[in-house]
Image (tube, rainbow, N blue to C red):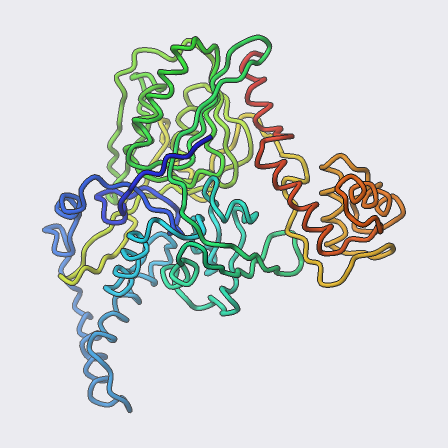
Length: 483
């Protein structure tokens, strides 16, 4: 499928920023007009702003104390910026952050350089830089990064103690350059390195096709993220599928980290009848604003929604609204982000504070924050979908044990070879499976796993997963339509 790269501009200054649980590494979202967005944004001098508290004098006293008595000279800017960062970080909210002038300039430069990077969305989770989801067809996806992977270092430099923006700047870079990420993955005892070549990031967000299931023409629409034009493109492709007389539909938002609120609203207007809201937005006073479609009734064909742990924010708005309207939701529990951010100019130098200002609630009033959306039909992918990059410092041979051996066994099993066991012991059956793989792929037949053999096994598994082979979740979503 040819990807049409669209020129999108930064969403961080939009009036309402629904998601992307943290920051994009080379992915940029849509905003129709930067100036009008700034005009409609909340400002730091909003008429509803609170008066500074009486003990604000402590801040001034501390400033004067440092300026008058500290051993070395300190710039005013350093102290003021530090105070702002301290206030925002004290919120203990991974979705609120301060971007000073330098950060904004660097971010804008990365935007203007042809949307280049590794293509992953990250957040701070328990003070760790954590992958929410790699972007479809991005270098991060191709390299095997997964939701919940923790990034420990970038090119050998630890990211401990950095804020999210600082860590992101280390990971971003120009097309064609390499970056080495040290990754800690749940269930893997030791961190491992992932080398990624930065590239242009695909930003097409909607993909559609038809499949024939039990003789019935079935539409499949995948939404990779929710950018400004996603709702329009989704509706156009849905209409095209309906003109082909589809008898069922699967909406796939697995690995979709969220995006623009208005985009998911446009999608839901196609499916949620006007007798219930498709989303509710709750302000800090507990007041809710309910949004309704003009739709009279549900679609005449069955629909399933696919989610996984990489489905966040706007994807969860879609999934829970469809679930509470009676449609099946298939897959694994979603990420769990139920808040809305607004990027607010502070001062006149271009700095921004991205601040959590709203909750979003489901049609029935449920807040899924930190809980996620539970599927109506829970389906695990095959074990080889969750394998890890193989680290081969020395050739792996008969009678060895460990995580690397187990990883290779699971991969071989997923490729149709029979290692005899997947418990991490390199026995005779595993030797035979390796020999069979090597023979069929014109490698030297040794029964041992060197770097070349491991690399080809891993490539075969990645290709199989990316091509949708053995996709139990999709299979269940399709089959459940007509049960």
